[in-house]
Image (tube, rainbow, N blue to C red; front, side):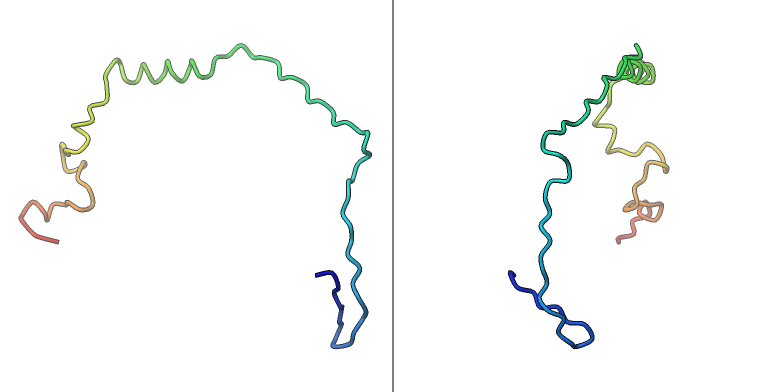
Length: 89
C-alpha cells in the first residue's frame, strides 16, 4: 500500500500522503528517574502469613475430606435431595 487514492462523495480528491511518525522527544533528552520509595517498616507478607497461621491453628488441609459432603450444605449441584431417593438424572 504505497499509493492511496482519496475520494469524497464519489469524486477523486487526489493521492494521500502518508504521515511519517517519528520520535516525539529530543534525542538527547533522558527520562527522569523515579524516586525510590521510602520503606514503611511494615512486613505485609509476614502479617498475612501470621493471620493465616492463626486461622488454621496448626490444622492441615484434609484433602480426602474435600470430596465427601458432611451435610446437605456440602452437596453439589449434581447431587441433590432427589438423588438420595434413587432418582437418575
